[in-house]
Image 1 (cartoon, rainbow, N blue to C red):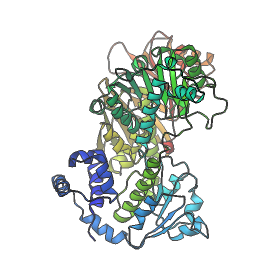
Image 2 (image 1 turned 45 degrees about the horizontal axis):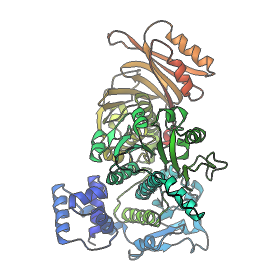
Image 3 (image 1 turned 30 degrees about the vertical axis):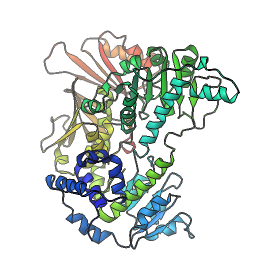
Image 4 (image 1 turned 90 degrees about the vertical axis):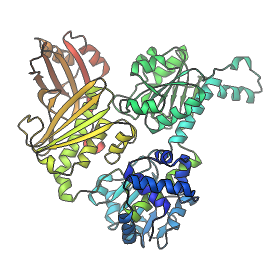
Length: 612
């Protein structure tokens, strides 16, 4: 059976590692056309087909293996759609001859019974796909989540059983971006108040004078898919766009007319500030009293990301004082919110987490996951997977500690370096030099980009490419640096315009992740839990002062590791990695910075590798 143009488009994008809008640019068509072609809607012009053929020839893209895979895999598939989906989603599977599709309302003996001979399962957020359910699905090859979060799916259990788990990140990016712009306009023109007074029978034209967006500065915190979609639309309003995201390269920012700035400048220069970052220890409560005081008088703040990014009490106080002219919040720490501090404030717009709730977005996620599942079952093409069942059970068991180590080491470097990343260099030594390292590489990148939206071990390399971050790998049978006496080591180097940083680590006794070196200073410290990393001049008294201040602040020390720079450079610098029982708070860091010889201090919280 010959492949359709839609199937070839999907395969070509997968091999080239590009997105629909990038394929559109290469073929000279609108991005919506690629989306429709891949859905099998509309017939491409002969010129487009020829451009595609030339592109495939130039990049040596071949479809023969996929066609044979289609012949071997595409017959007699059974799909179970455990939750309600749109007719357009059903149509994707209905177009495949011989495929059996069971919808949520046609499972008389229950979901477990229906999965006994099923090849694919599609869910939204209500159905819990746990190990017990998977036990009843021996033939299951793929689980599709129509949405982003996969909290309702036991991905670890699926991985052990060789089942691919896919989601649909970015399908609602346009919807969220559009609401962000709508809220900006509503704040600028006082639309909510205007509507309220009109319904109250009042004509208060003079008190409703607004402001134009033109010529103002828009600050975007977080330049993932949604942040970039906001930037693309904001340009049409004549806004100057600045952004902050350590996981986006300068090249990607320039392509989208965004000037990358430090976080302090983002806060100080923005007339409008919109939040599009994930929730991490570093971003939790980032809109707080201190940062609000540093913002421009009269700033307007929009949050369509996570409620926990905002200190509600501090924002309410800033709104009352006039430091913040207005705020628009679509997300809240507790949903639905109970007793929010914004009652009675007419300069606040509140919406019930509707940013991604458009008919188009909801249909898009359903159609997208159906297409992904179809292409995997027919062609073996994996898209937006959140696990990687490409290792045998024996290989996975052997590499699992180093996969976990890679995520931890990446997260350590990202939090300790606190700089934009332009390139990542991974060095595998010892037994890792002969292993399949794709999952280790992706775990390291996921750790480095932890906190950026929707990054996991499957899509990490693609996200890095999308953000203009170069990734280079070396395999050395000799140990990379020969540190700590360990036979198998992993080293990660980060490169940016501000300089480079490197860390080396290993696994001791099969289960204990250990840092062995950081920026050429040997130090052995556990890579787990809460850490405090300090650099200082190697002079007497510093270690004692660090311990004293931590004690005074009620911080209990679990482990204190020390190292000294032996390069011969003067003045000599030292490094301490302190493991503590609880996260180090900003007041503790401020107290530590009173130590005269202290050069820098970073609070680090390391997630388990399974959470990356």
